[in-house]
Image (cartoon, rainbow, N blue to C red; front, top):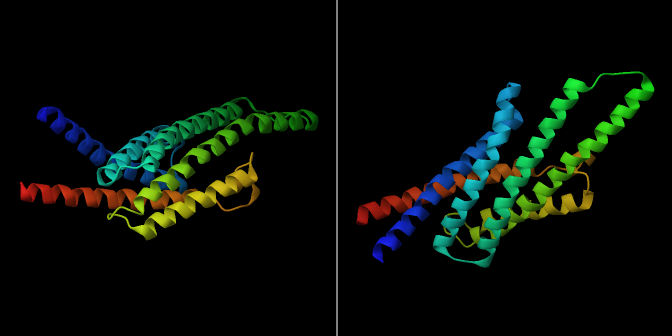
Length: 221
């Protein structure tokens, strides 16, 4: 019986450790892709893999918060937090496929045909725009739900949790208000970079707190 308990604790430790670093990698990749010009092929590869880091990060964060305090909101957060990376992966895959197809097969014709091609492109492009909104409708509630638990965790504090909740709630309101078009496409603020910056600090704090706890356990054992 003791062996089972020890193994379970080790698995939780692994999730927290790998989740913290995976979440940090996700945030760094996302922000780097937004500000640093990259070769097209590299950008494609990074876009395909960064959602996986977010998924592992969310599960690690769930275990980290649950170790301090179990709650319904934390469990709901990890459920939406698993769905969010799946949706952003679908959105980016569709987006890159559409752009690749149009680059290869789109050729300017006479004005009438060109106008028809543009209308077709806009109709097809609405698919990835819809997936973009769907991703926001999962990731923003995830931030809000995790933030409620973060407010009660000593590694983060109420102010940091409150900032996350406001970012999530504000972004959710904007996405519902502008649906089916993403807010940035109608000239409204994009909370994405701010939310990812918040994630960057979140996972950095999580790694630091977990290292501190591990060091304390090693010292006392």
